[in-house]
Amino acid sequence: MPHGHQPAGGPCQHGVHPLWSVRVLLPGGSPAPRIHMNIRPFRHRDLDEVMRLVDRTLEDRYTPDFFLGMWEVAPQGFLVAEERGRVAGFVLAVLADVGTLRILMMCVAPDHRRRGIASALLEDVTAAHRPRVVFLEVKKGNIAALRLYQRHGFVVTESLPDFYPDGSPGYRMEKRLQ
Image: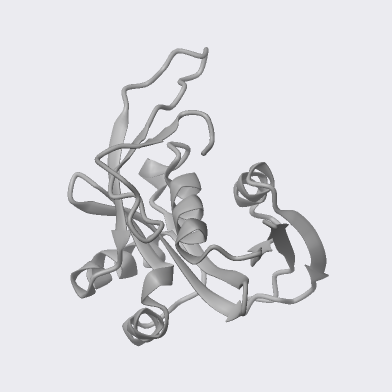
């Protein structure tokens, strides 16, 4: 577990921490107050908040049926980070093959970024599946996401020209765990 992240509120069940306590450093190095977030499986009642978050933060558009279908296929891979009863972020992942986890999407609300939420989601979805390999795709221009994944041990394994629906290039990144 990275420095500064502490699961609070009891033991990990099925790889998902029921409550994370995160300490963030403010500019100048002084600690910000701890934030508490609940990382838990997606529930149907989260759909409206997930859709609003996607519409606010992603260029690509998705339908509610996409998320409900993914939830049906991979419920253990659809986690939300909840802070004060609101969805602050989510991760969506599927087993692509035996021992291989593919992160399809991770999204954190702009006003909740740089607070450890993406790291906590990434760690929990990985712990829930215990894969040997985790991979994902990311837009080349998404520097913040690239840095996050690199901090978590992901390396670029392939360049993907015209990968995204808008024609944007991407990278495939991978992390080997065993």
